[in-house]
Length: 502
Image 1: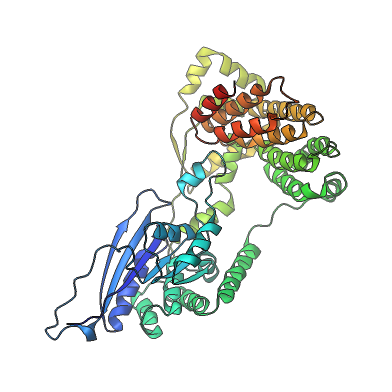
Image 2: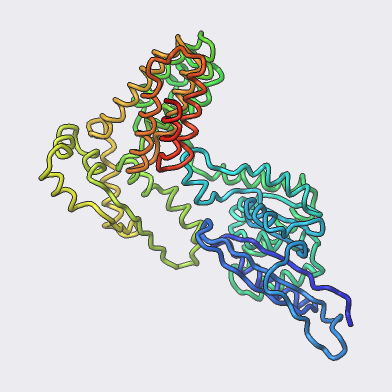
């Protein structure tokens, strides 16, 4: 009876990355290398377009007993008994470690790029998980850890992440299969042979080389992507001069990004308004925490002034960069048509916000016109891959030139003005509190009901300050309330915190 144990491999991939193709290629490679092989998969549900676990076991045919009885393979990976884990994204590597699949017997191969989970995106604040912690744990927990940016390499070579994973498995040397058998498996597949082979070779070299070589490969790919991306709007010389002469050095780069955002959102004059407002805050920089205050306002003001109205949403949906990103994710074959359908659900408030101030305000205050307009709301499916659907959003995005006359613009600018006036009033008395008030802007974001909830939380926190402007603990109190507001989207934690604070 043979004492040779099967070679066990776990593949963790997201939907559309080619994990199933990698599993098929590996089965073909193993059989060409004289191994008996089996693969199973368990698809995930609602995990970043569907995270799937593929589990494979290989057994050398030469070690089969004389009666040629075949081994009984497992259907799922067993914690502590996996030889190789390869993850298409760093958090998938973290999930594998969490399941106990990565131990001191495991070669762990992972991509360093991020695909954010729904929980991370929907978090009220910054819900991103720190990938550095996952990478540090991987170095401690795995027998051997190989990492580089698989997504960037796939983009550079015009293929999918799956081809990179396949090459990384070969280059790692963790499997006893000859390189030519890997290549033969790709060719036997018959689809995207040239791009897949090119990507395979690049990934094999990165995985086989030192960690520095792998990082350099990912960095070069990132530079290549950056060179091919759409250039950011340039900063006009007068605005650049204003930033250099009036904005504290620590906040200048944030101010530049804010100016670029305003130009992209509206126009150069709007960027000038952004700097006008920032100038007043920068004038307070002589006080303690003045530089911190300018940085916080520069960031928050840029986000608030580029609020998401219907015009902005339509503009973002029809941009060429978005269409390019969709095609990159779908990767249609030559001659294949791609249809894009946008799901939109405008409310009466969004429609009125796009109308002139008087008209929109009148409808919101009136019962009959509001009921009539409500008939136009509800779910809408707009096929932007068709002329009619695209022109609808193109027309809506074109209202940008009249945005300053809309009800939503008027309301947002009034709120921004009150926020800045409050900061200017508080800063001389309690600089630390002014910084926390500036940071509360992160509560006001999103679109529709999300924006309304955030604005209500923002108003509740600022309204709770009352006559405590000079109290030493006011800044800590506002910070705690802000954290409570970000804890859930129903406002439960904030309500409890406000009640506890009196």
